[in-house]
Amino acid sequence: MDETLRKEGEAIRRRVLGDDYVDRAKAGADAFSAPLQDLLNEYCWGLGWTDDGLDLKKRSLLNLGMLAASNRMHEFGIHFRGAIRNGLTDRELQAALLQIAIYCGVPAGVEAFRVARAIRAEVGGEGTT
Image (cartoon, rainbow, N blue to C red; front, side, top):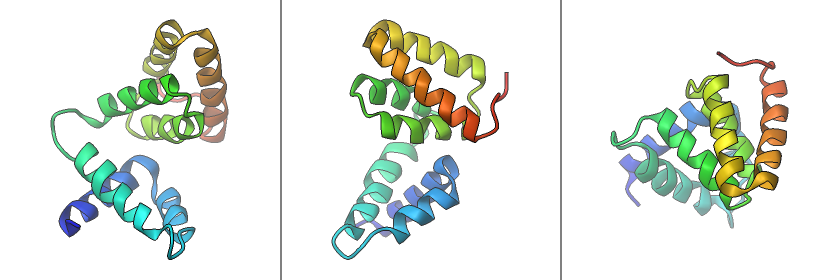
C-alpha cells in the first residue's frame, strides 16, 4: 500500500463527500471490511481523483453519467451530493441529468432526477444557479 496516496485519497474523499460521510464509512468497517476503506482511499480517491488532469467538477460530472448508466443509484446519490460540494450549479446538474436521460434512457433519467430531488431537499433545496 502506498501510504502517501492513501492519505491524499482520503483527504480528497473528505473534501468531496464530507468528513461525516467518511467518518461513518470508516467507523462502520469491521476487521473483514476495513481493507476496502483503504482500497477506496488509495485506489479510487488517490489514483482516481488526485491527479490534475481533470478538475473536481468534471470528475463529478463523469461519475454521475457513469453511475446512472450502470444503474448504481445509491452511489449516484452520494456523488450527486459530492457534485454540489464540488461547486456544480443547479443549471449544470440539470443539464447533466437531461443528458443522462437522452443517452442512458428516459428511465435512467427519471431515476436520476428522483435521486437528485431527494438529495437537493436534504442539502437545503435550491443550490447555486
